[in-house]
Image (cartoon, rainbow, N blue to C red; front, side, top):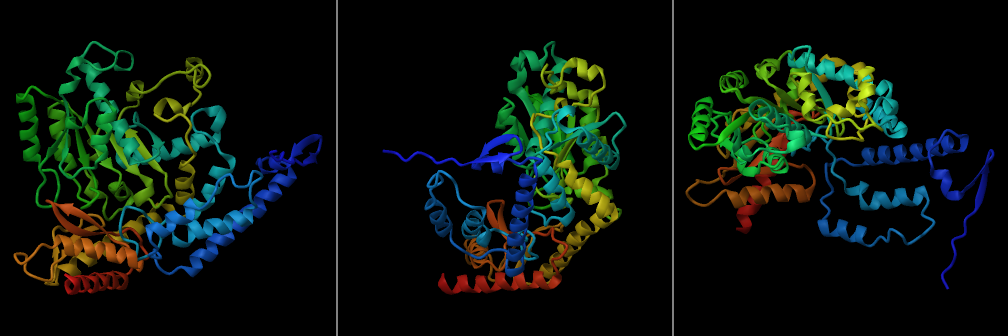
Length: 510
């Protein structure tokens, strides 16, 4: 016979509750007390962990981590475990071996170290759990987000009629840009409403032009938008991995000659691998001449907007029709914190929908600011609060110094590698990424691909630093993504020494 669950009841004022109800976060004293005790334990554990780890990774194996988690039965105790038990468990299966993006020797991907004010903001975001879709779920949070949207629009140089919304990340923001580009073209050239009638027969001929090193999310999103990955037409880049505008003009004409229909150009302000910034002003002119939507993917490079020293690199972004910016990259925010911006708020019509229970037409007529009409999400976190805390506590000038230091580190690395004869550097950094490879022997003797792949894996497995690799023209290269302002030239030199050591190790076993 199955044992029956024993449920103990507790009196809270005039309400009779079970033990399990104590976990519901509410405004009674016992709940608030439990909240404070629980958060204090969690913060203590995190702080102790940070103080006792001095590498970005422990080097533990994927098998070890999987086995620890597989051994746990999620329902082994119907009544649940204590917080202390679960924290100890989490330490063993996650915390001990998690990747430290904030370590100065983590220079792999576009993961930035985060700022202490944002962690304070996260406590408010998760604890109060405002949902940004409607005014009656968010109140003041709505105007905080709107204020930050206005602030970003001003930095972009967009006109006052512009608008924007916080999103989950660059992929979502790029999708919104492509969605608006698609539907703007349809509304302008066809007697149908794509929201109601779907796509015209000609949609199979729609083409979006972007550089050959643009982000993969463009293909992914065009597939989701019903145009297919083949709608992406890559345009050749120059020796600095920027879109070649002469090639762009040729590709537009070639597509027209093939009977296809170019509808948009995507410029990249900070490619993932090279940090290259396309010639935005020239692309904007070509887009205007051909009546094409111009979207800029500034997920990486958007942080340059607040740097007096580097903002000129984004000249021309003000002529775009829409822009993607990831605050959780070069604004040093925790994920997720991203934004999508459109030159004209009327473009919202392509995505807005009125639900009587949520954002009725009557509410809009009354001037109630329901943000859901601008978003492809409905339920949405108050992620804007993190940026608000950052600007109010650190300020724009202070924030900009972090990215400026990262760029200085990239220039230092480039000069260091350029002056060595055992490394090949294939570009000059424009933001903070460096793509290179270790080349200790003549290229015609044997491939460098195996060598550099080995180095990347060996460094990760050792855990003292984390770098990554990419492929350029089918050859394996190593990559530094420098975002941490605490990374020093000495750190960079130590990582290069690790590359050389593991490279020599590879030579001995191969």
